Image (cartoon, rainbow over all chains, first blue to last red; front, top):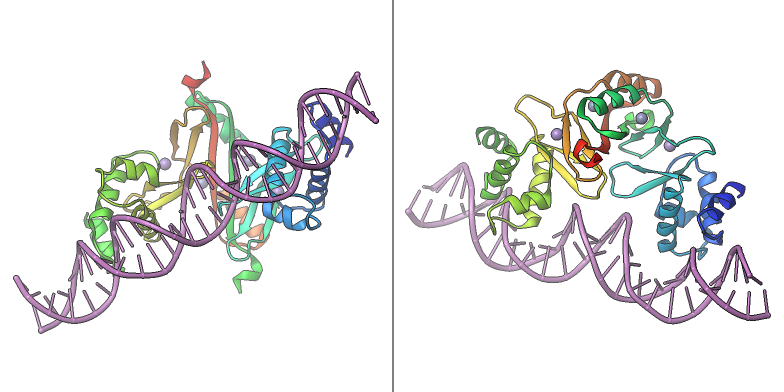
Amino acid sequence: MSALTSRLRGHTRKITGPRQAILGILRRHPHPLTNKEIFAALPRGRCDLATIYRSMHLLEEMGMVKRFDFGDGAARFELVGEDDDGHHHHLVCMRCAEVVEIEECSIRELEEQIAARNGFATVTHKLEFFGICPRCQR
Amino acid sequence: MSALTSRLRGHTRKITGPRQAILGILRRHPHPLTNKEIFAALPRGRCDLATIYRSMHLLEEMGMVKRFDFGDGAARFELVGEDDDGHHHHLVCMRCAEVVEIEECSIRELEEQIAARNGFATVTHKLEFFGICPRCQR
DNA sequence: TTTGTTTTTGCAAATCATTTGCAATGAGAA
DNA sequence: TTCTCATTGCAAATGATTTGCAAAAACAAA
Ligand SMILES: [Mn+2]
Ligand SMILES: [Mn+2]
Ligand SMILES: [Zn+2]
Ligand SMILES: [Zn+2]
């Protein structure tokens, strides 16, 4: 709440129930959640789905959450640590959707080469792995 | 057409005008196209948008096109070469949407490590780079 | 060619995720 | 407590993609 409070205050933003509740949910989930999952995890009637969509945009702008795309049409969000920039990847089971966090990223060098080679600036990347998890294999 | 013909025949599928037209468009475009872009590139009234969506699914299943996701909500497709498996990446300008083809992929080793380390099978990955192109920088 | 069977297509309606208008409500400053 | 602006709920709007269904087109067989 301290982080939320200070960051929100610096943006002429208000500390509201929905925002605190959403961050609470995110804080206790290790993998990215969709807006709908956050909605479902919230005590019923706690807030509207539209409010969650709006909150996620705000939190994303403020760098408090990171948006991920597993290609199934629904955006997913994960809380970003205090000092961390949140950059990391995932390994997703194409059968059961189990998610494994991949903290390492050895692509930064390749990224730089590609940026330099093509004259692009502020280059970033999105990378996700897909496969069949151990349990779904048999 | 020969490739289309033989591949379609082997799937109890028919060689239709729309399918040939779509492949024609794809063949003369070096970067991935959205369904709507394919629709727009087609001679007016040549076929319905729904038919394009259905065709892309079919062509994807047959491995004749590869689906890409630049995160803007619209799927994009690119023709896959005869023997090629179509795996590659892109560098996309976040301002003007210019696309640069990135043929190399030095992530396959990392991919294997991740697959082995987590017991996942048939692991693949999706990777796209984003940045600001030279022209948009100034 | 004509026929018979199966796949495709066009069109409109349905889905789904996400966004937005607007009036009512809430938070924080004074 | 009051005032003002941000925020929310609700419903309607969007935009991409999918789907039901009857008509049209492919193709193989005759
Ligand atoms: Mn994660
Ligand atoms: Mn490409
Ligand atoms: Zn990375
Ligand atoms: Zn790759």
